[in-house]
Image (tube, rainbow, N blue to C red; front, side, top):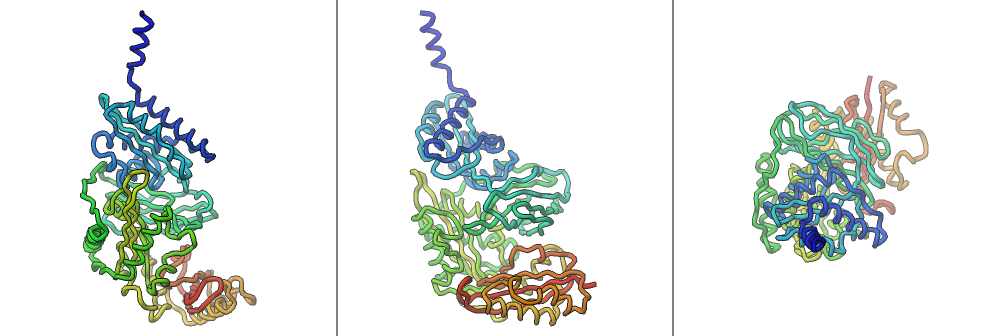
Length: 501
């Protein structure tokens, strides 16, 4: 009789949050093993973030707890930097029901993940459970999230393969976006210096380039001299039709631009068709990237639609609603740079409503262009000069002096490269650097060359030469033509830099 009573008492003992977290983690690992994928490792930062989000899901809205701004803040506060980890949230009136629901899921291992976090919050019999799965694309050296006073700080990290070509974007407290120059870049490693010159909140984003184009590899928040502003998000009513979503997102975009004293964007029918077709294609084919599985990118999509954009850009967002997807875009410095691009005059918005495992999901595509995206630049070389001057100004540097001798040399190299269908560095004959020294009568201390092929000459490559403080003079050469390697009607651009004595 005593044994029966004790057994009943044990059976009635409620599961603890630790029990629920451990059983969920074991289930996730078993699911990865079942499908033959490498199992993720439990990560302290994702675990702490999952616990915070579980508490929010229990106290407020399960869906709102894991929307992009809340998710980014929770991961960042925990010391992590994984951008947009996959999230699964369950809230139940009974603790066992939350655990039973997650243990029944067989879709947790559908995509790769390297790191895992599980968090549980309980209140009485009620419970909320959150699973976070991330494919870590960069490992950053420890970087504090709070500073009492403004101070410059170094940021270093290393990409996981195949990402390379680091770009760092920082949204300043007033909303402006800066791109600090890299202080070191070797293979997959990179370093930069963040100024953090005034009090407020900064958003830091590291972007790398992989096989599918640019990818956000790290994203985190830094507060300087101000209290942490946790959980300031407000509920919004999400639009339920494509037209309503376009109208609401356009209103957000232009409100942000007006706040930065920029003219509003106008809608463009062709850009809208390109954006809508791409959102629907991503939903239909099950991918989310700037480069489609067949290798097509924004430039090729615009060309196919007959829109030869002088300047173009693209943002992609994914969430349970269109406004939530756009909020994630605004939260990303690199994407925010497009929203605040002074060169853009028109925008096209594509919205696809669909469901994933019974959950609503919206794929949002924002395509930006100048002049509705219909003409080639009148003076592509001048566009390059203006873009270079703007880039240097954003780093507090004066524009470089143009030298006709370097312009002639750059144009010659661009023409030869197009004719040979190869970069200038692979052309036969005397190296470009030697010719630069001779053109400057041996008055140069150093010389460097950037080369790129593009549909948009003002879209500068990621190069440390752009913000080199030692450089004093430059020359740009551009030529447009067809290439069996790089495609038809593209610009071949050569930029020569030199530091004179």
